Structures are given as C-alpha cells and as structure tokens.
Image 1: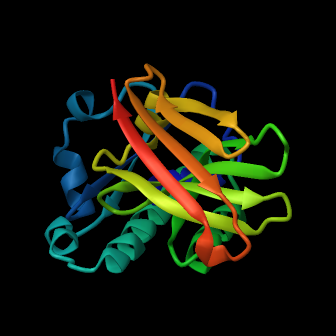
Image 2: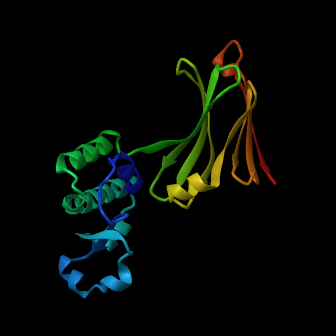
Image 3: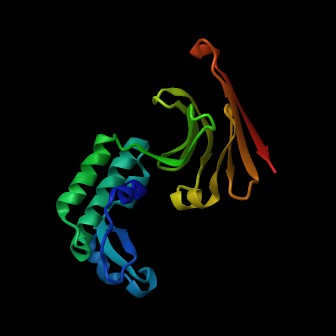
Length: 210
C-alpha cells in the first residue's frame, strides 16, 4: 500500500525533506519517550500514527491487512500534508482511488513492441502484502490479451529493488522474447505462436540460470 499510495502522489514540495517517515506506535503518549535522534531518518519528515501492531500481525486475511495498511498510511499522510503544502482533497482522491481498485497494487515494470509491431510484451507486477508476483503478458495491438503467465514471486516487497535488478526485455524474433535481470544471470525466454483457435496457442517459457 505504501508504494501504491506513493505512486499516485503528485510531486511534493519541501525545502529539505527527502520523504515522509510514518511511525506506528500504540499510543501517541509514547511519542515523548522516543529518541528521535536514534530513530528518525535524517532529512525525512516524521509523523506518528496510533496503531495496534499485534492486532495487525494477527490478521489472517491479506485483504484486511491491505485495508488496515491504507488507513495507517492515509492517516500519516494527512498529518504530513501541511508540511508539504499538499491539499487534503488530493490525499482523499488517492485514498478513494485505491479503494476503488479493490486495493490491488498492479504496475508495469517493462513494455516493448515486437519487431513486426503486431504484439506488445508487458512485464507486470502484482504487489501483495508479503510478495511481488511478476507476470509476462502478450497483447495484440488492439489490446486483446494473447496470454499471461506468472514467472516468479519475490519475498522482498521493496519495488525499488525490483526496478534495480530487472531491466532487460528484448524481442529476439516476432514470436520470441526474453526478460532478464541486468546482469543477464537469470533469463526467461518466451516462445509463442497463435493458431486458428485460441486454445491451440503454442506457449513455452524457458528459465535459464547463468
């Protein structure tokens, strides 16, 4: 939810702060006991939100965890809004957009057209509570999805690490495309071929570790 919320935010204007740090504490009274020098990140604007961490961790539903996380982030952002000259209606719009999306955090990692311009390959990411699922999707130019398949899941849910590690998407032929990490040590090679009927689609993914 944090990355989803951040992605929808407009550019915030602050003279010195690089970002916002939201602390979850059981009671705002405990704020007085926090050693800000030890815990606060330099050049980050800190806000404090009351949250029952044990109750959150005891939630068994991924959906409920997403909903509770959004409430915490939204509450923290409202507290930080004044310091960043951000109007509250902007934050309410973001909050409502996430709810309308049913809390599904899906984003595009890479996108590239085939040499003949007939197909588009998308590397799409579904950010869950404890993992990021990465999919390869082939679309026609008219938007019709030929097929989609999950390639792998990452337990590290920091999206920036994903962007840093994976950055190669290259078509080898009109029906063959490769997706790889930036060191080319992990390569996923997709070969596909449309037939007269969708159910006869040829679709093969090879995973190579170098």
